[in-house]
Length: 206
Image (cartoon, rainbow, N blue to C red; front, side, top):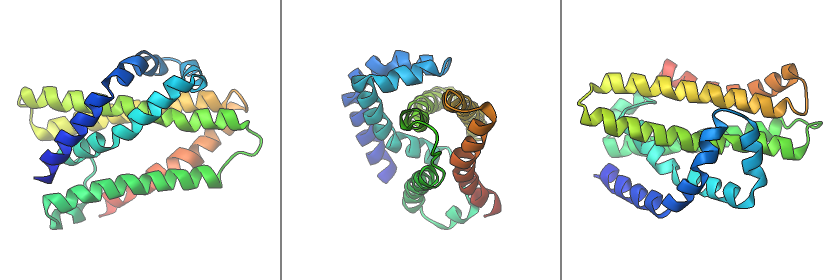
C-alpha cells in the first residue's frame, strides 16, 4: 500500500536527520515556554537551518498521521480510495501553505521590522515540528494500548489545538516587540485565522 511505502520512506528521512533533531530539540522545547527562544533560534544560522530542514522532513509524517487517524476528514473523501484520499491530504497541506504565503504577502505590516516579521512567521516551523513529533508519539503509544481510534483522533485534535494556541501566543508576543498588543492581535487574525478558517470551513460544510 502507498501509505506503508511512504511511512518507511519518511522514517528513513527522519532517521537521517536525527542528529539535527537532537541538536535543536532543547530550543524547540524552550520555545513552548518563552518567545525569546524563537528569536534566539532564528539568530543562529545553524539552528535555523536545522529547523527548516526538519520542518520540511516532517511534512510527510504529518500528512500520514493526519490520514491514518482522519484528523481532517471532509465527507467527500469517502468517495475515493485510500490512496486517492491520501493524495488529497498532501494537496490540503499544500493548499494551506499557499494560503499562509498569500496572507503573509497581502497583510505584510509595513511598519514592522522585517526581522521581527520573519521571526514571527518562521515560528510556525518550530511548532510544526513539535506538533508532528507529539502526534507520532501519541499515535504509536495509543495504538499499542489498543485505544479506540475515535478516542485517539479526539485526543490528537485537542493536543493540536493546544499547541496551535501556544504558537499563536508566542507569535503575538514576538510581534508585540514592535507594536502594540492590539495591533499584533490584528496581524495575527489576518495571518493565521484567515488561512486556518478557510481550511476548517470545508471540513464542516462538506
